[in-house]
Length: 290
Image 1 (cartoon, rainbow, N blue to C red):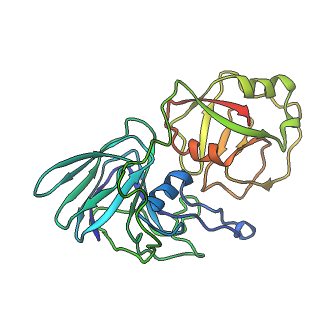
Image 2: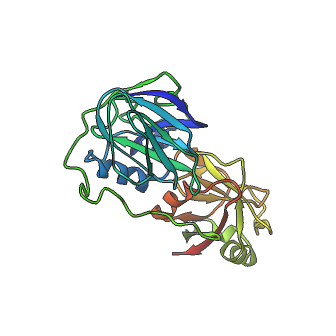
């Protein structure tokens, strides 16, 4: 059990999401970086569906009220545990936490979203079968706030992963620019050939308007459509790269709208969707077919 002292900019309960409700206007939601969230649950021996806490940038702090095992994955950040003695650690490290200690996640030196898992997961109410917080639909638990008690759940499913090593290898590594793999289409034919080439060769910048709904990118050369007629609204999926009239792409995240009326030039691969969840304002991005 944990008592929240501080959350940083934003802390949300997330899990694998609520698939199957697009027909009623509800997107899947769930962890933005699903792979990092899954590694966290695997590391502490939880079932795959166990809720985790998605922490934006860092600054999360909580008091430990009962002994537990925990891990924080995703970003490259320091983790400080204070109590009878002070321990300095890092993300991607299994942590034995004892009652009375305080765990503090530093601000990320690389990456954007961290995932906190404890042995057994968290006990959280579900909406449409999921504990994920959808910021677009306002479904699921409210954002976590100081003073909240985080109760343990019943999601333990096995032994701790790598109990002797206790350190997971980094999943993401800093690069001058990040490369996201895509499949072209379904509406790449709505763009001039030069625009498609620009999409695959120029470097885009992640803007500060990005969030869980989507990453808004700035293009040095906006992508120009070859067609001027309007597209009927179509179904959207996580990772859709939609191009509004401005020509600056938007990469849809887990809380994306279920339909959209602008052409989708490409769709990210699943692994690149996870990678997109770690991109912060100012990061540089390239796309390639993969």
